[in-house]
Structure formats: C-alpha cells, structure tokens
Image (cartoon, rainbow, N blue to C red):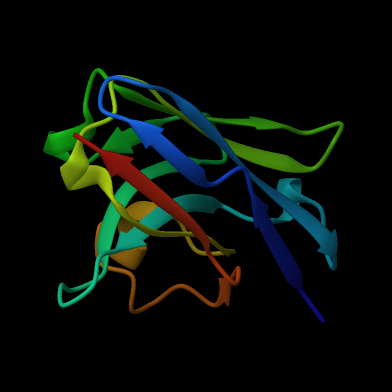
Length: 128
C-alpha cells in the first residue's frame, strides 16, 4: 500500500509564494521511486505535468513555470516539495504529487497517464 499526502496549498495574491509538500506516509520511501512529480489541474482543463525529478536529481519543468517553481526532496523526511514563487492567477489549480518506479523520461512526463501512485491533491488559488 502506498499513501502520498500533499499539504501547503492555500490562497495567495499574485506575486506571492507557496511551498507544497508531499509526504510518503505509507509504503516505500522516495528512494524506491525513479520518478517523483507534481501535476496540476484547473477546472475545465486537462491535467498538466508541472515538474518532475528523476532519482539522480535531474529535474524538468513545464515552460510556464520555469524559473518560478522548484522541485526538491528531503530523503530523510521522505518528503517531496514544490516551491512556487512569483505566482500568477493562471497557476490556480488543484496540485497533485505522483510517484512511480519507472523513470520520468520513460513515463513520458509531462504526461501523467503512466504514474502509478498519486496523492489526493491540495488546492492553490492565486488572486490578481
């Protein structure tokens, strides 16, 4: 059994910052997974891959968040983070963390269809 639990969402004004956390509370530690990622889905829109990290630390980001968002992990605390700076109203969405033993590249990130494990989501709302 695997349980990923996100936290850290909230409401901020444009230009503000939030840090999302995703803790693997049940199941393997993050060292087991080759790919850790963040996705988001806004109302009426398709799910979008935001950021991903391979086991070796290689990261990738969707163009709209490059330079503003940073994905990282704390192995000791078994927690994945998404630091979000310079937030914009277009960043408003439900954010999900995901994990899989397969490499991000082989999963086809930013596609999310292949990921095996997902959190329940945390809402981020950015007002102008």
